[in-house]
Image 1 (cartoon, rainbow, N blue to C red):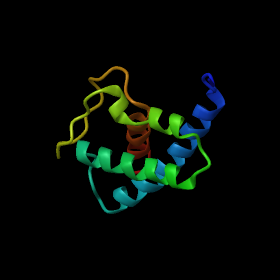
Image 2: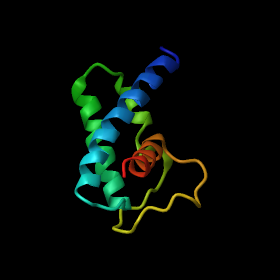
Image 3: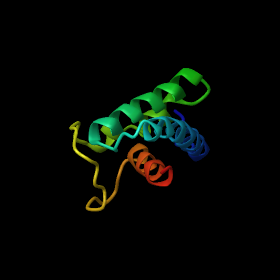
Image 4: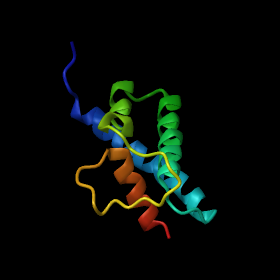
Length: 102
């Protein structure tokens, strides 16, 4: 059985960050505000890109999913992360990209 390989997780995080930035740029250009529903959409699109590339370990891609962290609402309300503590990696990257690309 293989153990945890941190370099694979870092590779997934770096590629996920790039994918999210390009997706967020498209939504920001369209003038969309960041809602919980849009966060889920962006996450789906970004993780699908990583899966389709086929060169990253799927186990580490799955670690980036918000669903691994419990319930994240799927509603059309604006995202407010200031009151939250630890957040899933995908959500953190989406929020950072949305804040920096305007």
